[in-house]
Image (cartoon, rainbow, N blue to C red):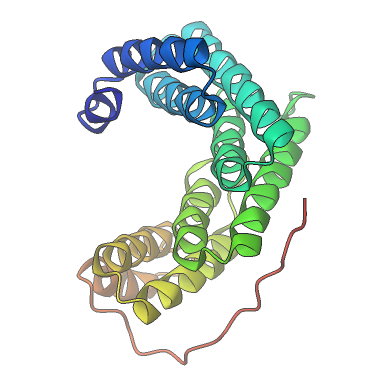
Length: 228
């Protein structure tokens, strides 16, 4: 039920259901399922924080999400659940990126959060690479690309585009149409952000948003294998 409420955008209800499941799995000693519930709680808390207008309340939710993910990571390290760790580290990196939405420029904690974002997603992508989960790697890479687009403290349009193109190439190779559409849409958003400094980017942005990308040479980008 928790995942259903989360998909519906009812994050408070999702958190409540995941917390109930967490308690049950804890009583049963099912550590693998327990750690997943901790991650689901954190993901819902992060999404709820995005909808929370009050800055203090939003930061409180992100702090709780961070604590839940740290618990999950410790459980998964102890039991060597590498697949869980891959998702946990990506989730933690996105929590760190959302903290940056609330940290003013020049704040001494900003570079710390940026480093945490980069280190955690590198760990997560490294686990997906080691597991050979190519499509999951590409899908989570797309989440990281979006962070580089949307969050001012992280903004790097060139990196966002490079990561998105890597993911798009994987989705094309594996014929994942929905994910292809997501990647093309993100490329359209990236080119919209380029328009103030690159007026001709408007045409390219429209083409991507319509799912009709301009013809460009296909380039293979070597992926670094981050070992954790």
